[in-house]
Image (cartoon, rainbow, N blue to C red; front, side, top):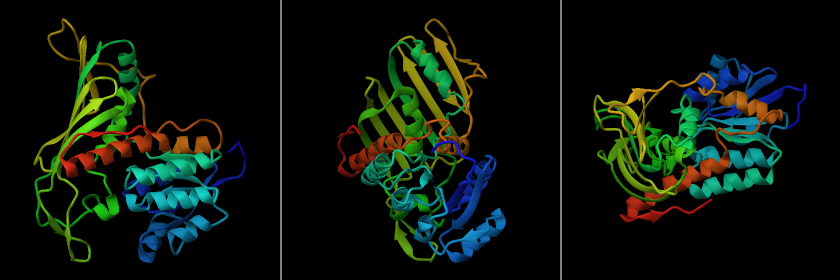
Length: 347
């Protein structure tokens, strides 16, 4: 959309924690943006969010909100189960789309979303990006271009959320395959970050384990849990390196997110938001300075509005990249189910 003095009017479908803490304030910080209407999972929660966030109107359901002719853009903050249908409906009615991460339930939905966005190149289609490595992304990319590692040999990712197993805890949406699809913990989001550095994987072998097979949902009904609590992946990268990814929700008292890149001439380690490195001949890693000009930050809402106004193109994150991480996520699920190596198709 070209520059215009008319306000950009936005509707919110699903106002969870991230939407209320980041997207709504971030959008309101952009000049000429109005948040017009919100709809949540129930009428009561819609009214509550509207009152708390100062939004004038609510809608009876997401379809009614998306159909409003006075809206320019839809922000989707729901569980993954609604990302595809709401995105398709919004694009079909000529509205820009910003949807939460975990692009879709599976790769087939992600393909539908990408195709719908390509049918409307005049509209902005954006996924909330993985923020884990924002601060160091440009520095890592530069170091790799400059040959800091030489030839990349291995990549190791270890992510633990610090939780002990609690069999009595209720079912969350992340553990509910009916709402989250094939997404497992933060797998797709971390893979998105790693793609910015080293590109895509070409094949995977994966094993996962669910340690509590049944949990009660919000209604008290006992439900089967099919989403793993622990995941181990061995992957070949298209660049020729080998990757090992471990994600776990059962590492009691351990809060960790670490990436280790090892090459023929150097090593890079990312952890706790900082970057360490060593070159051949060094006997220890040293903390690397992130130049101010390279230091990234959260600017999702700014990028969305700027793209709508024709000032920039979406980089974080495009639907094309979302499909790539959904293809990886689906390959991991298939490998776990069939206990075999799975080749990842190209987009």
